[in-house]
Length: 279
Image 1 (cartoon, one colour):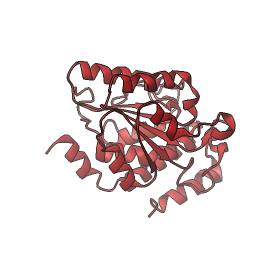
Image 2 (cartoon, helix red, strand yellow):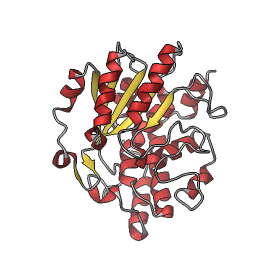
Image 3 (cartoon, one colour):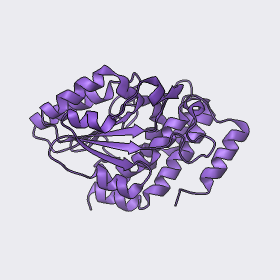
């Protein structure tokens, strides 16, 4: 059995995996008194489907040369990647309890230093996609068949460095690169539309010669189909999501970009998540 087949068998229900990612994230940000829980909750389903049904990896050999490379460009949501890596056996679940603690390898913004399974440290927005472009170009030149997958935020599409990469990637016909945009419509302290309007967002990507698919970023069937797609040229999947998804009082609330769940809020959040994933 291949490593990907084994991963799919071990993680039969990606919705359950997404729910565990959410519970880990709420607890990690609670214990560390750290930020960005809303940003993690919006991408939990994307991470669950990527690691449960799409990506090739080996948790016992994180540097396996044929692995797919995953870049979290929205590095502030690193707790979600740490959670899925622990769930997939890259390191122990107990390690998650050290998130954001002094001396911990699990920093608030994602870090690759001594964290198996993390390809790149990110945090300053607009860096992930340019690096992913270089990785995909190198793979092409070396005749390798792995994919490079870059998960971006909508807010970081304000960054000019991304649009340089968005021009570069189709020019070099990098069909081994997949971009997923977490389009939750909120950034930092304001809505995306009020900060710097992106629309018509899909038209912009298509004008730059990208294949574009628009999906519900919480629907696992849509996610699996889109993320497994192979097309001629690079693919951008625009995933419409809800910031804070899974915790009612966090959903669509910009407050939870920086707020840490404590006291009754933590108890309420965990109670809602203990009820299980959405039907």
